[in-house]
Amino acid sequence: MTETIARLRISLDDIEPEIWRIVDMPLTGSLKMLHDVIQAAMGWQDYHLWQFEAGDRLYGVPDPDWPDRDLAAARNVRLGALIERGIRDLTYTYDMGDDWRHTLTVESVGLGDPDIHYPRFVIGERRCPPEDVGGFPGFEMFLDAMADPSHEEHTHLRRWHGGPFNADDIDEQAIVRRMAAIARRRQIGKAAYARNRKSA
Image 1 (cartoon, helix red, strand yellow):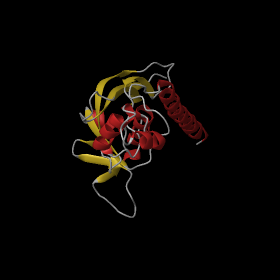
Image 2 (cartoon, rainbow, N blue to C red):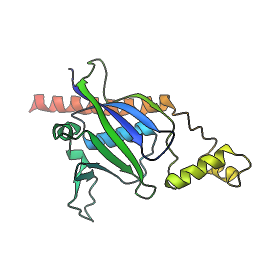
Image 3 (cartoon, one colour):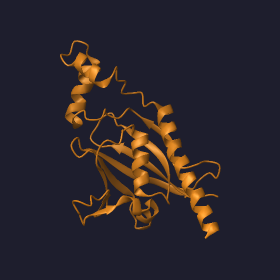
Image 4 (cartoon, one colour):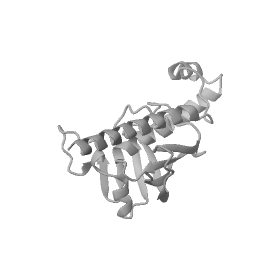
């Protein structure tokens, strides 16, 4: 069955050259799924807290021990519902310490290919920063040190990172694998839902 897809551009704010990705996301997908898609596409490891800002509302994972009436559950909100409200840009913040802010822009909305399982990665450039590198200032220092063998932090940071860091290599195969895993989980969930409806 053909479904409606949003083509989204994801850009990591305040970094030049730009670190960006383009993905296709089903409108029926939740903001929790969109979080998973961003993690997979950018190359993050999902170690930290995160939230979306859309218009005047915040979405994330509410903590039952610290009720925050301003933070709605991302798993209960569909991307299509935001687009229907006229939302075309969202801010996604990952790791409140390092404060990685991403701008998401809805580039287009249309019918997907019935032979493709969504979500899917389309294209992108440049590798995202390592986890826990220390935000933008730490990433700048990390890049300088990794590029200069004579830098006093070069050996330490290379060991910390586990080897060299190529800022131009986004490891597209790994991104495609991670996105395919999300699409498979979605297909399994849809099939289970359809079976339950038939048996009800």
